[in-house]
Length: 193
Image (cartoon, rainbow, N blue to C red):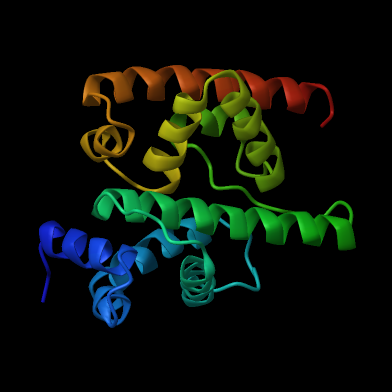
């Protein structure tokens, strides 16, 4: 019962325009993709994490519903925003856990092979979030590329559609952002952070 991206885009736009029932029609169509994103995040979290993929999707859904009306561009834009919300939920959870229990063994989604060497499997989510915020201050688009590609699971083409740049530009930004983040995280680890 796979629906076309065009149909999802139409429902997103209808939801943006306040059409009654659009969200109820949309969620069954995108739930599996949101669940896939959540499973991807949770698979890289520490064992025994109190959030499940279902809970993460539900929390993201509640934040989407409660947020101000967004003018959705397309399915890729929706997935990018959803991925960003899921990352924020996990970062908020990690920050609150650190505040309650210093030295917790927090796990971070590893940035594929490029960042895995720098961040390591035990790097914490807060450190990566801080590094992404620092990157956003220097180059917001490169930070968005990381969020969309890694956290959102979007292709270079989909990322380009969301950011309104070519896939080649996305790939260049992706390469430079990974290098920058690797350097930042390595510096933080060597500084004892």
